[in-house]
Length: 92
Image 1 (cartoon, rainbow, N blue to C red):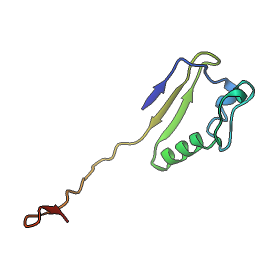
Image 2 (image 1 turned 180 degrees about the vertical axis):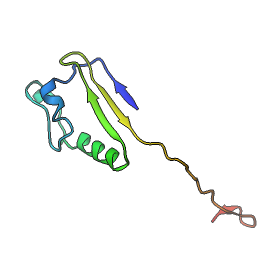
Image 3 (image 1 turned 60 degrees about the vertical axis):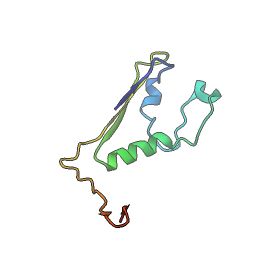
């Protein structure tokens, strides 16, 4: 999955720290509403635990950003179907 925008972009010195826990950017981002700096770190950790990867790319200030999440496909997926009790017409 890719999400790309044409917004304010991300400067190179910020890109390398973006997925670090509690990282909240620098300088001009100070005026923006801020969280704890955990969202991207958690997204990366969860994705990696599932065998995937999260990346970000930006050509710099005012040039937009692109975030990518890659997850492996399962070789075979089985979905359990609930049994139906014919007397009660409810799933068991």
